[in-house]
Amino acid sequence: MDVLYSSRPLWAVLVSMIAAFLILATGERNRNLRESWTILAALAKFLIVFSMIPVILQGKVIEYTIVTFYPGLLLQFRIDAFGMLFGVIASSLWIATSFYSIGYVRGLNEHAQTRYFFAFAMCLSSTIGIAFSANLLTFLVFYEILTIATYPLVIHKESKEGIIGGRKYLVYTLTAGCVLLFAIAMIYHMTGTLDFKAGGFLEGSGSSSVLIMLFAMLIFGFGVKAGLMPMHEWLPTAMVAPTPVSALLHAVAVVKAGVFGCLRVILYVFGPTLLHDLGIWLIMAYIASFTVVVAGFLALGQDHLKRRLAFSTINNLALIVVGAVLLTKSSMTGGIIHMANHAFMKITLFFCAGALHVKMHKDYVSQLDGIGRQMPLTMGAFALAAIGLSGIPPMSGFISKWFLCLGALEANQIIFLFVFLTSAMLDVAFFFPIIYNSFFKKPMDDVATHFDEAPMLMVIPLVITALFTIIFGIVPDAFFRFFSITSLAVQNIMGVG
Image 1 (cartoon, rainbow, N blue to C red):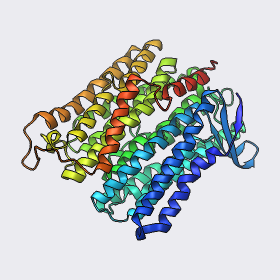
Image 2 (image 1 turned 90 degrees about the horizontal axis):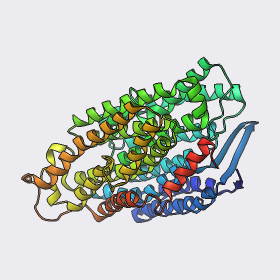
Image 3 (image 1 turned 135 degrees about the horizontal axis):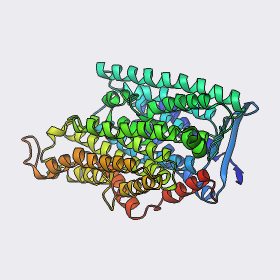
Image 4 (image 1 turned 30 degrees about the horizontal axis):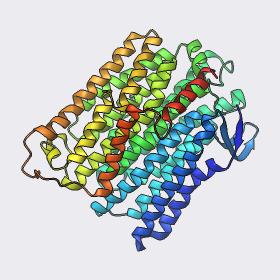
């Protein structure tokens, strides 16, 4: 595979870090200038990332070494197809989230806005670092930076519930980080390298029992942020954070970083051949399937809208893991492309929840009767994203779930086909009553029957992300080339091409 040496990966990481300190320096003196740093950094980051897509689609990788500590122990960026997919997701959605955040914090006149935007920029810087990491060490460094940078956002309201949620978040994620550090040290001792390799690099480097233990430790370490049960409890608790933070957690950064890490372990550290030889792929598929089904049923019982969306996220991230660990071409394609499709659909749903909170101060499903008549753009976008997550064509979620179902058949594991279909039916069960009640039930007393939306800085981003869920369903390779990038990643993993 050809290697292109370039500093662009470094600049993609640094641009939002530089903006973070400019935001801090500007502070409350000039809010328009402070928010301008956020927007400019988001646009610059996206343009840098987008400029590298043609190189990756040519079958090349882009590499940049920051420092070499010891042979095989480097802080290094290397962009392959899978990393590019995550990088494009994060950088494109940060633009929408940046505009939305400005509308949200100004609409509610939030306190500590400078701290908020500073932490937000640091989160995106570390997320791109994770996406472009060449090895487990670089991944861990940015993974832990993301943990620390997210904490001020989780506790932003500084309420009792926020502090409790933040502490729980740190306990779970920092414990996971310690486990990851131990596992990574063991891998380096056994192999002398930590570099990701399509198809894995651990084959033949240790006994079966040691490798199974390492797999369990790595999946635990990354599975905490991915919300795999029983390591999920911090995620619904963290919903006390402002809604743009919840969108960041669920669609762009934290939980996506967790599931991205799980897939790196499955496909780039162990690989399909070793997982088959060890016999742990099927066990992992059952564990993730348990999360899919249980999280779906738990979502049904949530009246708080953001908590319902949180359990929906847990459900969908587990779907991605099941797809990866079934280790067939179609299942891996479905799992990887669902990272992108889910990101656009889920950020739309959280944007809608935030618009409802800012405009109507409504946070519960039981309060939404008739609200679609007052906020048709918001609830229309909600409906599109919810239909997509349910896997109904022509929305993008249909593409993901089609390939996941094909993958279950290719693996001769019919039970997982039923898992995927059950998940889709649960999506219908906990989303469609919201859609029906908001448009067809009699409005509540405090709901107007005329058009009256949230601030346009919030509504425009959610409409755009909702439209993308239709576009990616009709033309899966539109704009960002998600489908081509996914196909290339799967080919590399399977050693084809």
